[in-house]
Amino acid sequence: MRINERRSLWRRLRPYFTVFDLPLMLIICALLSVGLVTLYSAGIGIPGKVEDQLRNICLAFIVMWFVANVSPQMMMRIAVPAYVIAVTLLIGVALFGTIKLGARRWLHVGIDIQPSEFMKIAMPLMLAWFFQQRAGHLRWHDYAIAAVLLAIPVGLIVKQPDLGTALLVVAAGFCVIFLAGLAWKALIALFVAAAASLPVIWSVMHDYQRERVMTLIDPTSDPLGKGFHIIQSTIAVGSGGMTGKGWTHGTQAHLEFIPERTTDFIFAVFSEEFGLTGNLVLMFLYLLLIGRGLMIAGNAPNFFTRLLAGAVTMIYFTYAFVNMGMVSGILPVVGVPLPFMSYGGTALLTLGLGAGILMSIQRHRKLVQT
Image 1 (cartoon, rainbow, N blue to C red):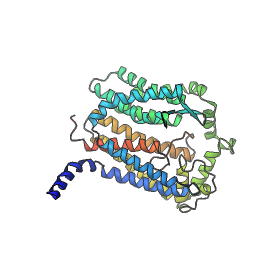
Image 2: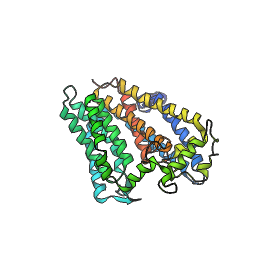
Image 3: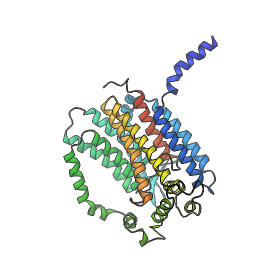
Image 4: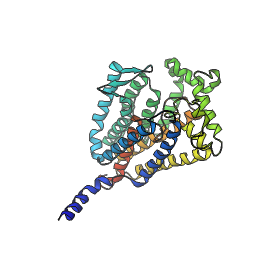
């Protein structure tokens, strides 16, 4: 009887432990493994980094497992409350936020939280829900309303200021709007309007933001100040050559020429130690991650899940593209981590939450009514 009871219990619990999408899980584990190896080298002389990251990974997997067990129908029900709560927290940051390193990005509620991170997921959830309610009879004013829903949190995040997170929220939100059927004519008009507004944007930018743009154009104008990050990271990327200097043998990192080498600039450490060959392997892993996300989006059963899966995949793409471009000196330094590689808890939890959403959509694709 006891054996039969155990078998019966396992049959009831088994669906909750087989929620992980195997291809997506393997890709994420590969990226996490590469990240831990690189973090060990980058964090030599900084005790506790690998141990803390292992703890962050465990928390991210718990979040991933929990979200993968949440049905898309439940996600639709929590979309509006999640958006409202996230916007309310952002308003709370603007009014009562904690200032660190000259930026007001945190809210103290017993512990310090960064509400802008929640918006990376709350924003595509809200827009996907919004377009799902209007599926089949979308009009131009629906896209205008969606743009306003996107502009409100982005404006609050830019005010903090946090351009990196604002860029990720814009990418996720715009992806939903585009996939909902935005016409190419409207898209071209938006790009023209954005280009025409560049002088206005430049005039309202903070001094340090303008300096970042000017430093990108000519980092040697301030080699020991604003240009230091870009110069040292590009030296590290170039010095890796074809095969790299070898694990733990990167001179730029271990002589502490690379700032933030365990977080935003971990790609510079990886490039120096594993070279172009390692970079090609890493980019191939990210292409697999994005490809799997797009495959899940393509197989999603309804409008809401297609939009949501596409937006989560765009978040991964934007993370990787902006970070690699930033470290390579082709984009301004905006503080975007490399997904599943950079050290950090909040960003990793957000990435794990996104992976859980993809796994939930894949798991429930035959159960959701179209």
